Amino acid sequence: MTTAVAAVDLGATSGRVILGAVSANELSIRPVARFPNTPVRTVDGLHWNILELYRSVVAGLGAAAREEPAIASIGIDSWAVDYALMRGGRMLGTPYHYRDERNTAAVDDVHSVVSAEELYAANGLQHLPFNTVFQLAADRAAGMLEAAESLLLVPDLLAYWMTGRQIAERTNASTTGLVNVRTGRWDDALIERLALPRSLFPELVDAGTGIGALLPELRRETGIGASTTVTAVGSHDTASAVLAVPALHDDFAYISCGTWGLVGVELEAPELSEAGRLANFTNEGGVDGTVRYLHNVMGLWLLSESVREWERDGSTISLPALLAAATDVTAPVAVFDANDPRFLAPGDMPARIAEWCRENSRPIPQSRAEFVRSIVESLADAFARAVATAAQLSGKTVSVIHVVGGGSQNELLCQLLADRAGLPVLAGPVEATAIGNVLVQARTAGLVSGSRDALRSLVAASFAPRLYSPR
Ligand code: LFR
Image 1 (tube, protein in one colour):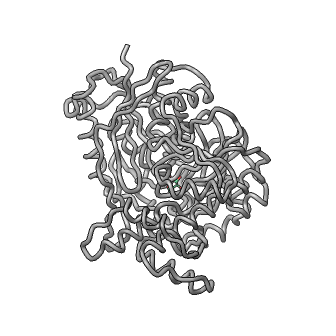
Image 2 (cartoon, helix red, strand yellow):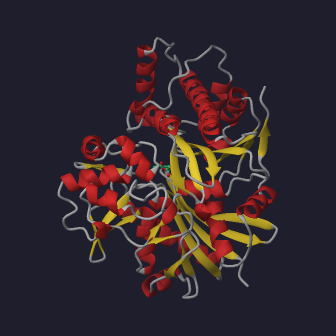
Image 3 (cartoon, rainbow, N blue to C red):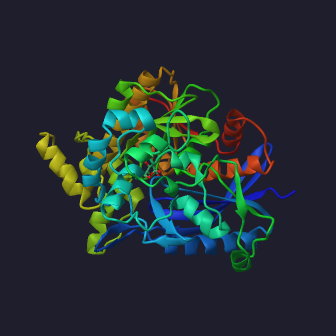
């Protein structure tokens, strides 16, 4: 029996196709394609270059098939909330990037019909101005929904292009703001109150559902056979990442740290207290009906957007060298509020950090090394606070913090987090999202069996995390 599956994992800055090989006691991954994801600003705003991404995914699947002729299944995950509108199988326009600013007015429009409290009672989500519900309100105001027959979130759009079948995978659908947090179904009452066409929302399926084989044209192009199924995985990248946390006991908090830092705990049922709403904690859907009770912290975006600014003069910056210089900074640096919404949009990040420091009478970083140190300290501080808040709001005991994703490679960040939280930090795996994607496929294909605990033990045995003890 084949033991290989292919994970398509699209992040905000890059995408990858990864082959996963799974047996009862080992999991290994092999990247076969990596490609940049560069958003495009046009006169009407900031968009994803979705066709280029799809082209890269198809090329990556071709490379995967050349390396591994017997791929049992393909799974796709990406960031959440963003979507394409569809009519008669065609995509209407180019999907917007969640960092586009068109939602700002729409937030007030939505709240004038359904208050923030009512919205939270229905969907259990933290307020993020880019949640799909606000983006759709902006589209409605612009008359864009009139032609639309359906809506597909990004991984579901790619799965549709591959298989011809339109579905909405549940973990990602939970981030739209239009799935009811208690029933796990599209919230018909909310959709009606917001005057959104109910027909936009496709059939919901759980992670682990087969979507279909590749369309004949695509089979020819990639060399992948008719027996390979596209499988719905935890298609929200964070859901896949949380599944792949190598925790051996239940008393953990996780931080999925990439562009965003998603900080929280896994729960069996939603936690809908008013305190949680005010703390801006979210109840997003996890694999196997779990709840990802978490808060979005700005994440490595603060760093990558600063580097982008410093590279605007054409120079190239070495991130490892910059982090080494930041580690050597001895002067106390400002800890700023990494959750401040001013940091959300693309643009000059160091200037915005300096502005925050000025407004709050904190020392303004004087060098790039100081800026980086200030960013990493501020992230560690926000992460440690969010872990404490998650534990307090959920009543869960937290004895260890697992950091997965790109941020787990950032030694300074992991150590400062351990110090600030006063808890051990276990860092890795870096590719947790792709691993979680692989795990759901492998379980569906019968290559591994078992509970989430068993899957997590398999990850721990295959990718030993690195320990940072609090100093
Ligand atoms: C992380 C992530 C977050 C989501 C943000 C926007 O990649 O998926 O979970 O809040 O991107 O979609």
